[in-house]
Amino acid sequence: MIIPLLKGLCLTFSRIFSKPITIRYPEQKHPMPARWRGVHYFRKNEAGETACVACGLCVAVCPNTCITLEIGEKPDGKRFPLKYEIDVWRCIFCGFCQDACPVNAINLGQGYEEAHYRKEDLVLNTKTLLSMYEEKI
Image (cartoon, rainbow, N blue to C red):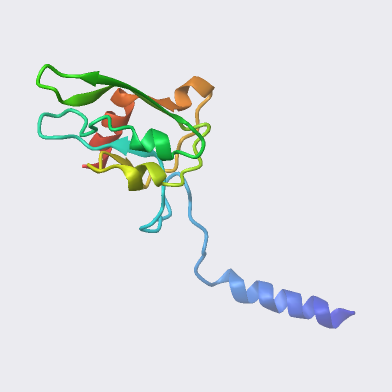
């Protein structure tokens, strides 16, 4: 009866003076693996606009249909997204949209802190996706 208690106390005392393995989360953040698929962001082109050419492949390949795309056309015939929204509430972060994009416009970053009080804040539009690119530079 006393032997298991002594074994437990020996283990406890051996761990008291060792280096702690916990991370103090708000101050220290755990580095994510290179293949981590976090929050979406848009890449910018030279003009500072989205690099998206509104081909619609990301919309077609999305298994949860969480991407909404309305296509616009410039006077020179180039297409651009008039409205591009990703509903992060429905997204499963599979990365199919990133893989399907021919110009590498949509990417999944390393971010994982997406807690919001309102469900409407989890719908990312073009402006939000571009502002998240600023954080990557």
